[in-house]
Length: 304
Image (tube, rainbow, N blue to C red; front, side, top):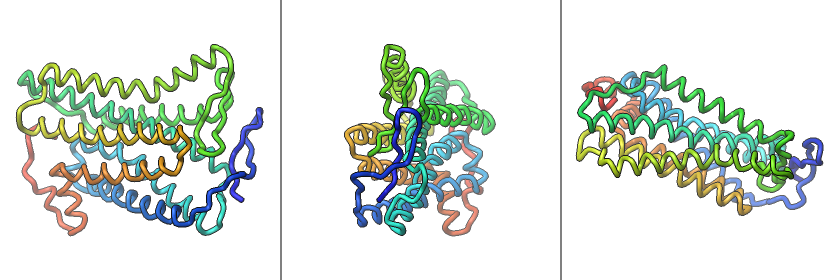
């Protein structure tokens, strides 16, 4: 019988799952979908890093760091579900705690990475609207900003798994997500402050950027700036909508639908990234072992 983590009031411990789900076909489909998603993410990430031209673009580096959580999440799904199919049980100790950590960090990184990208695009559109030359963020600056998002998200994810004076953290024994059962006004404030910081604040900022761009007519009628803005707008729509849908689904007790939604998100973002010319050229070079991506004529500073 599968083991799952329960909270006994003092610490987490493994115990039997009283209602294990035994759908072999479902686990097989999850492995196949997760493998396709992981491969698609890995191909885009590896192709961009291999191409000197594509990897020189700060926007492409943001996209890579947006895809890395999808890659790791889907690799984990492949490993866990293969072990389930092989052993017939959840063979990993504290798998529920690990699942909660990966889910929370995955959601938070996705949302805040889109905030970083939206801020960069907004700066580009402002410069374009004012007819000023735009200098994209260097790879070093991109890496520093992304590192902050990753570190904060990981720390936040770890904090949700432990019992603290403000939050009596427990794991939902069926969906493996943190649920906060702390009593008192302090716990109430902490619980909702965490939710606002992790989920609502990035969504509000993304909506704010979209409204400002629309209101001030910052989107140019044509050119590379318009393409980049619309390109990353589509990426944000995919990641935010799928993340929000996944959160709503998992809160209504549907972990398995959440897994399918999350896996498909990685595939869609990978396919959408091929709309960008330098990424498409880099991926094509990967498959045909050529070097045409580095031979494409250099575009203006505004498009890099």
